[in-house]
Length: 226
Image 1 (cartoon, rainbow, N blue to C red):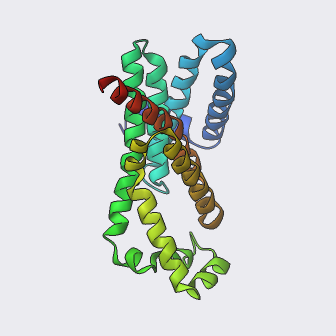
Image 2: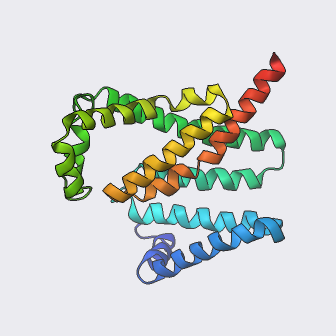
């Protein structure tokens, strides 16, 4: 693509300051799509397509540099929502919601398994180690935790159990799922406040409605089978 017309067009579109206007357009579509759901439903899919298209262009522009797991999850969320409005079959819509919920639960569970296999996490030293870094550090919290190793170990295992049990709690019904999702919201807000990982708040909490719906739908189907 380096010598093609497409590359030249993308260079022009994704360079500064054009890229800033592209992000402003995306923000405008995001704000408009919320109102369109109630007053102009037919405009929802085109708006979502623009949002998704700009998100894909942003991924192409930035590559893997400076990205996190939340960026991929955010892309999955945008794609799923666009697909949901692109199909009319109720079964297809259900499949999209199930996919998004299962994808989110898999992400949590995988993260929990990886932490469970990590000696620093099991020993309770991973959290203060991260908080001591320049990029994700919180000096005051680091100094507090380093003086309270038992609390740090409890926090480490709390995170492991929270992530590891994510796909299991939904089996206990909507109330248990709601408690889990409220805990997840607090979890991500705390991480954003201490480590600056703001993207995870938007990327993962955006999947919570699908997880809650998945729990209800799963129990409804099980009840019908029984």
